Structure formats: C-alpha cells, structure tokens
Figure 1 (tube, rainbow, N blue to C red):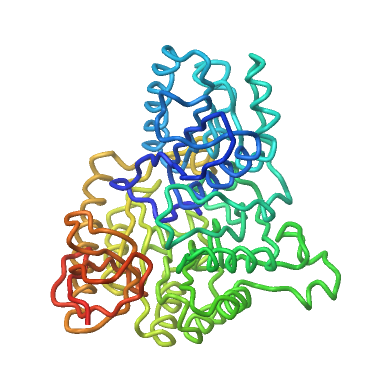
Figure 2 (tube, rainbow, N blue to C red):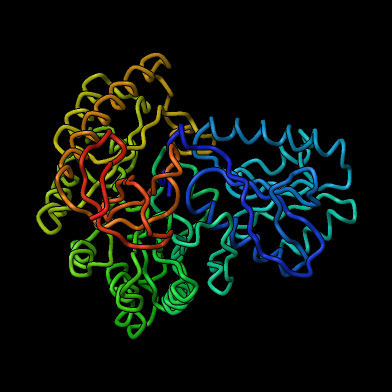
Length: 477
C-alpha cells in the first residue's frame, strides 16, 4: 500500500480516541500517520491494550502510554514523526512515569536508532508484533527498553475486533491482506510490512456483519494491494503453488471475496483500497458492475506515464497495458471514478518522461489525485542501485505541473455531476458550515448540502447544482 490515499496536505497525525467506558484505569494516547492501513492498525492496537487495562484519551498530558503509529513512505512523514517525538518527550519531562512507543513502518526501519542512538522512545514495535504489546508494556513499566519488530508470515489479526477510534459511526476499515510482494524499487513497504498474506474470508464477513449490526453503513476493504487477495487456507501468497490441489481449486481471490461480502451485507456500501494495475483483473471490475452496493470508484496508482520509468520502478506493467485497463474499466463501469498516485522526479526521469505522465493524465482525466515529489527511501532497491539525480527544483516544477493538471481534470469530472441526482451517505457536518451536511457519493466525491430532518448515517438523494474541483454542492431531493 505504498501510497494509499496519502496526500501531503492531508498527511497529518490523528489523535485517536474512543468513548469506550469500562473499569480500565490506565490511559493510552495513540497518534497515527500515513495510510488507512495504519489507522486500522491503531484500532487493533487499542483493542489489544484495552484487554490490558488501557482506555484511550485525547489528552496527552494525562497518558500513561503514548504511541505513535508511523509511516516511512516519504521523508516528510518521518520528519513529522520526529517532531512529534520531541513533543512527547517534552511532556514526559513533566510526567516522567509516561512511556513512549513507536509503532509501524518507522519502527521496523529505524529500531536501533530510536532506542540506542537518539533515546527518544522506550518501546519499538513493528506492524506484525502488536500481539506482543502486553509483554512489551510490562517490560517498559519495569524500567527496561522493549523491542519487537519481527515480521510474520502468518499474522493477519483476523481474530482481533478493532476498537473504532474517533469513529463517525458510519464508515469503517476492514483489513483483508497484509504485506506486499511487488517490490517497486521506490517503496519501503515490503521491507517494513513483509510478504503478502490474506485473511480468512469468514472472519472478514463476520466483521462486516458486526459493523452493520452496530449501525455502520460503509466499509473499506484494506490491503497494501487488495487485488492480490488470495485465500487458500492460509499462508503466504507466494506459496500458493505449493498448496494442495483441493486448496487451489477452492481458493478465493479478490473478485470472489468482493462478491461474498456484497451478498453478506447487501445494504452496506463497500469500497476497497489500494489496487495495483498489474493485479487488477476483469473479474474484479465485473464484480463491481454486478453489485450496486460496491462503490464505483477505484484508486489505481500508476506513478508515471512513461513505460521506461515504469520499468525502472519495477511496476510490472507498461503505459499501454495501463491504458487498456482504464478502457476496460470505463467500458464495463461507465460511471466509475478513478484516482491516481504520481511521483514526480524519480531517478533518471527526463523531461520527455514527464511529458508522458502529463499526456497519460490527459488521456485518463482522473477524478482525484495524490501527487508527490520523489524522496529516496533508505534500503529500497532505488536507493541501493539508482542515483537520485533529478534536481529538487526540477522535481518541484514537475510536481506543480501534475497538480495543476489534476485540478483541471478534477473540476472537469465534478462538472459532469451538475444537474444530476446522486445518492449520498451522510458522514457528518460540513467543515465550513454546521448548517450543511457532508457525505460522499458512490464515486467518492464529497457532497455538501443544506440540513433538513436527516441524520448522520442516512442515505439521501441530492441534486447537484454547482461544484468546485473537490466538492459537489446541491440540495436534497
């Protein structure tokens, strides 16, 4: 999930809090950075620690344990986390009993640096080691440093019921895979989250049903690469060919899983993230078209429009193959929205490569985009074998070109909704006005409209009257 829904303007830590009330006496403050997977992992962590006597709090000064769930996908994310750790330590100077821990991808990558060189934390826990948190917490409470960053071949946390932190009670994340096998040269995720393994579909359906019973109306199926979902009884995806003939014959891929979940909770909206172009099959697209409750939106990262650069990135598809996939999506689901990830200034990128990215964008006209200048990630194949040779100013200019074009295309796509009526799931108050609701349509566009007698969690039909490049504005029908 190298770039799942991360955009620099939105890449801010979220202090997560639940209203859960029980007899727990210790307080946990947990802050999450990066992708949706990290947010869901924080909910898993809160659940595990709840059983150890922790309630969550949004007041850092009163916390017994402070955890930051980290992202290593870009240098800016790591810099932000370091600043937060400095803040935590200033609070710890006032409350010396407070313990500080780092979770997630930075924990995996920088374990010794955090504990030994900088002495910024008491505990370092990798993404596959959250079950060990009770032991690790006891270790730090005894005055010792604690670390577990061992990657697992089997861990999916399928039996852990996440505590829905900072929840609107309407939308929720459900993880279905962990790890990544794709080895894109720019990406650190395979080294921080391990190999791909999928979660038992029965547990996914049970979680979806439980969320529906609790009043949730939309779930997002999560994975570093959801299209790689493959359940054959457990184990790494790379070992599928070694499985028994019966296991292979009865295996469930992502298209089948989508159908299973859609049928299990027919009134629940279903989204998924993130897709990899090389793994998205026509069967997935057909499942989306077949079931009305599967949202008509695909986040389909491409990173560059140049086949030469795609090869350098080890993306396993060409520009032409990507365009064919887009054409197939539009033919099967004409109203499907598509968003992108783009990297400006990857190693060796020429002006011609950059122009090919812009021309691909003109071809697709993405609804949304998540765009970044390349930053070298230590330990990745690109860092080991390629020179980061595009000057920073050139990266910035190319990124500005990409952002400007995406804003143009975003407005174009939004304008197509004017005069039409769309179904909106109300998620809460508009950020700009308590007199308006906000919610999203099937295509993931944010819709704002005046309040009536509706409530959060209702599905309403809204006629769109106007728009910006990011928001649809209308009235309830």
